[in-house]
Image 1: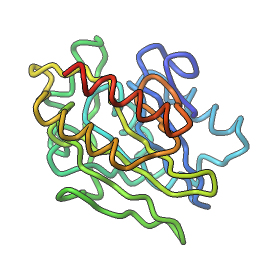
Image 2 (image 1 turned 45 degrees about the vertical axis):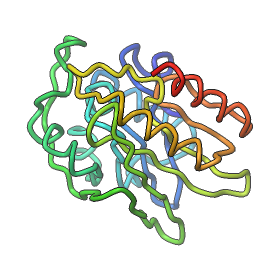
Image 3 (image 1 turned 60 degrees about the vertical axis):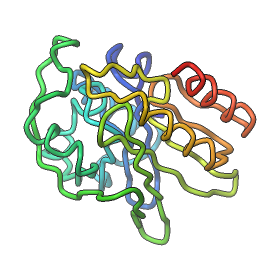
Length: 211
């Protein structure tokens, strides 16, 4: 983890760094922490110039604010689901006004379509699953490692406000999908990391039952 409300900026989501030789970020914070994110990557011993891609879990400002800078400075490829791509490229419906921050729209370089996809980085595969509910184009990602299945589940906790693009009925189906993945480790969108598998299931079920 290289970003969250403590590590980078109070407005930021959890930002996760994956090392596939080339570097991949999961999300990008709210936009006021670009320098801190870069510094945190460096403090962990990684070279930010090796940043290849940023996977966007959904198009809310606290997850997309630094995309433009990451793209411009490092040439990072922005990856997002087709149903949230327009919001990223146009800046409409990203809830920037709720945070009082400016969002600079940016190009989405790689579009994820449909319900599942696989992103390949060298010999590694990052599997993508479409989980509409928080937004229409919300996605989660997971990979299997020596420590078990790691799930980047995005904002499982919601909130599920229709005025921010949410659909609680779809969210119920999506959270059930995440439970069925039987992840051993959950990297959540704002509340950090949960393990082992029983704790992951308990966390997701708690929000499913509240909908």
